[in-house]
Length: 372
Image 1 (cartoon, rainbow, N blue to C red):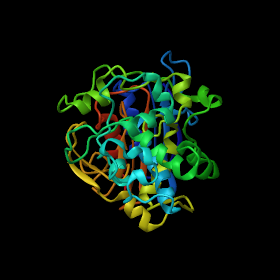
Image 2: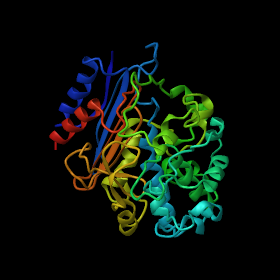
Image 3: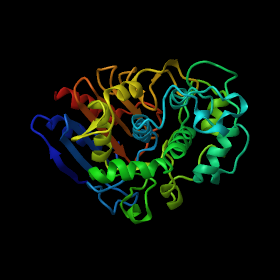
């Protein structure tokens, strides 16, 4: 097993040791971890294997699906639309997408939908699972859907549907898909190796995933949990070329650890990535302020949501509750801490079964903060 030390700034050696320990303890197949501090790359390490047969080493160019860690990156694109005055968080979604107002949803605001308060966590009635690979078609179905939860207040996490809602909003006001805006307006100009809708030409760099050995645990089995996770039609076939190429802004972003951490530096530096300011302090405040807090009806425990990004209420991502963060299926995760200017991202291909926590990621984050 080989570890690649692409970048380790002086004083951050304990992070490398924690990364190595995960492999020594038999917890990894392949993984990467990266951190940026005030716009400077301070840690970038990779190791292990990108494929299940252990023939392709994981290196700095390996692309990894980060699943729901994609959501805050997509939320940056929505914030860009707010900055350009094409969207307003406090305006009803139906003002931009009239069909969405069906079935009692006419007053749901952009911020409520982005903070998982729309009651659209999934489909109770069967759908063709192939529809997940047709973002416009799936969005049309969501527009007609009545909210679940019988009017319950609070959040009910939308693992997949969130991305189609955010994506259709962007398409309605900009004319381009969310993934295309991300590529053309953010990633390509700044040479950031992250994709929502990964072209076939990049698939040879993608790692192979090893699925969790145990199913995820939920606090209860209500209609929203069943619709979101447990039905045969709750998700598409993940991993095929069609899945990689489709734009699912909630769940199929592909990137390196370094690129993911760099995008999350927008949360650490109040809307700035490198020398580029994506949006103003006013929009940053609207994006990151708490929209809902309490027991989630899908995820276990209490959760704090801003407009598409989690707030660090459970302190899984360092000591500051002001940190903005998100976990992805199987253990990936990223964060941006505006109190320190620190951002980081962990990606891997051996998936765990916890929905929010991951011991490998926690070990790395604890070591990182210990270096400050």
